[in-house]
Image 1 (cartoon, rainbow, N blue to C red):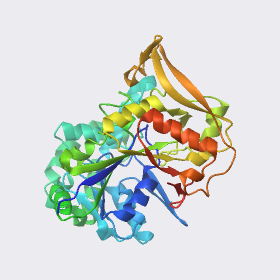
Image 2 (cartoon, rainbow, N blue to C red; image 1 turned 90 degrees about the vertical axis):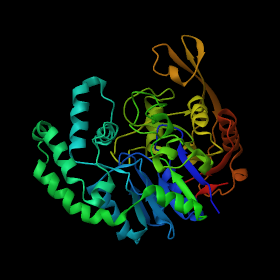
Image 3 (spheres, helix red, strand yellow; image 1 turned 135 degrees about the horizontal axis):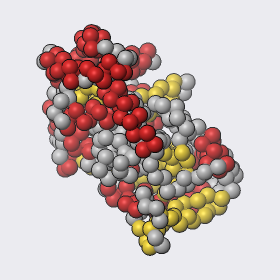
Length: 417
């Protein structure tokens, strides 16, 4: 019997709390598969006293039975991947559960060098990347200069790597953090650790589905950072929407069943780019502190704002969402009045997401009553304070997708259904 896979994607600018939701859902799945992005995307999972930040390995790692698959659409640095595997083994995760597609591409040390140099050259126009080389690695893939995990496993990478090092000799000298011989030596050492995990990615995924195994597909970052459909050019370098699961894993659209969107009860964004609902000053600072809004990967403070229903509606259409999970509702407890962005205007006329970079751009914000009661103990949406229920109902209506789960705290069990 051939199964269909379910997909979990973020529908904002990333950091929606996908990791803990995937961790929760993974209990019902045999495999959690990640389809894109690199180690610029961090997922924090907390189960009891165990708290771990994952950047490449899928977020179902703390479930005991799930296999963890890194798909062909992912780009990954070898040193970071080995460090993550070791960290997981330290907390009791069997590394044999981790599989890597032979189509996934490698981020080499010269890619962060390119990233840093590119951002420096942009000056005030910089994108605000994490500087981890993800963009340059995707450029190499599109330019057919990339090196795959399959190249590493087959031992055919060396000639390609030497050519890439020759072409970047000036950059490597200017950066000074590593030289070519060190990169070659490091790659050879790390290859021995990585290659036992490398599999034929297409055969692995299709074999799982055809064998009736339950597969949960995990996205990275958020839909509004998609390289084509996000707030370009302030985006990531990969496809972050549900359609990216097809190209990132090598499956057809008919292989996908449910598409679950994850959104915070408010909005955050890291780095540059337009952010329509941003709260500046004391209110934004208070929301940042209450929500512990600092980047998992970079530690950078996140920009904070009200829930943007226009952007969320746009993301719901891009992804074909079947349901919605709202995270961090507990952060809003104690705020007297809450805002929801319900419309955009460009030069006074109604506008859509494409207008957010316009100089004449404005938002319409609807205010709702907040609630003062703590909600961390609530396990049913029906038991939330009346104002919290009204807030969730308003988000549900504004986005046009039913809410199936609400997060009321960081622990795995702190969810209301």
